[in-house]
Amino acid sequence: MSNVLIVDDDADLRNIVADVLKGEDIIVDEASDGFGAIKLFRKTRPDAVLLDLKMPHMNGIETMIELMKIERNVPIIILTAHGDIDSAVKAIKHGAYDFTLKPPDFDRLILTIKRAIEKRKLQMEVENTGTALKQLLGKSDAMNTVISQIKQIAHTDFSVIIQGETGTGKSITAGLIHNMSKREDESFVCVDIGLIPDILVESELFGYKKGAFTGAVKDKMGYFESAHKGTIFIDELENMSPHIQTKLLSVIEKKKIYPLGGTSPIDVDLRIVAATNQNIRESLKKKEFREDLFYRLGEFIITLPPLRERLGDIPFFARKFVFEVSLELNKQIRDITDNAIDLLKQYPWPGNLRELKNVMRRATLLTNSSTINKEFIEILLNEHYTEKKCMAKSASGQLPLKDALKELEKKMIRDAMENTGGNKAKAAKLLRISYKNLFDKMKEYENQSEL
Image (tube, rainbow, N blue to C red; front, top):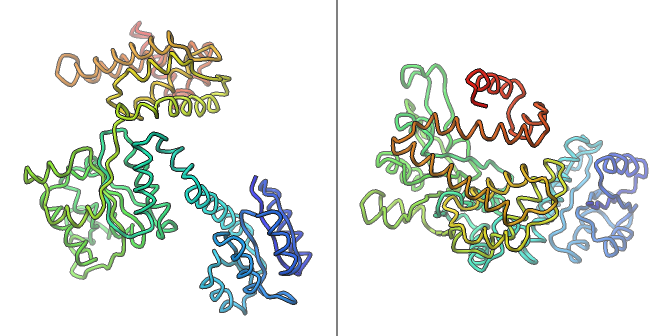
């Protein structure tokens, strides 16, 4: 549980705030002045401090400076009256996390405190051991290198290109870079170029003005303007047309965008993180990507290794995924046997972590044992391989994609119904679809005698 120290000479206010925070499962300690706060702070080392500005003997700013000498990065939230905003701003300049007015808006106060606590926990983990990053990205030597790169680059405004195969964690890495940056409290806007029709890419990125084209009945803000002061993450960079590459280069150099149909530029201050599942330098050699844009976007390049090149991460992630799904399904699965892990290490995982997660979710759903063993994993991997082969056939024209998806859907419905003892409501929850959707699909397949 998190711990917050409240420092205020108003006992009634301390009691009210303490009751509210305790209702959020936050442990609360209280001090009535700066000297008591310093003594208690040394003892409890709270996750955040709620500090009044005006107190006897030692005011809030003096108290804050002393607390930060003990622990530099502790988030301190200032409590101030309407007439003392200037002092609150001064406290921010001295390193306070935020301030809130008296009497506090409790919903806003709770949100501010929780954000401060989460930021502090992430700071401690990253600064001390990098545990938070390892939990998300892996613990292998290859990923330790990536984690070091993220920690080096996150606090800067350098543009970054993340390259790696599908499923290696490019979007997660981009999110981490944003969350560890000075822009963390601003927007993180994700754009997948591959999902936007070519004809719409320009209007989606840069926006448009009313009347710019048929159907433009009102102004629309583009992704770049939405990301102002924050970070824009551009995925599948390799799908960007030469025309859009030229416009993007102009945005980077001039820090301005021109919406379609507009005559006046719009200033944008943002950081660009881009991702590609190809080696971007190969695209340069083939003249498929502008060299000048590459040098502006690729001030720093992070390459995520595929799962087959970091086998040491497979046991960690396999157990992590099983644990997460066990909680979701309220199942008591304690572990995966060592020989099952060995089998997982032998599989090439072309879909990387995304594919491993898919298999482990299915394993957790279908097993009726407290331990996932080798034989069970072997059956699942064989089924998984067969399904991927079936999908590959559909792509080559040997089997229609619709039929391949239909076969996979029927199997998942059968498995879910078997695992829930025929309970349609539970099966729908496991499949993450509505009860009506499941009912309609079962009725369709039953009418065709296919389920």
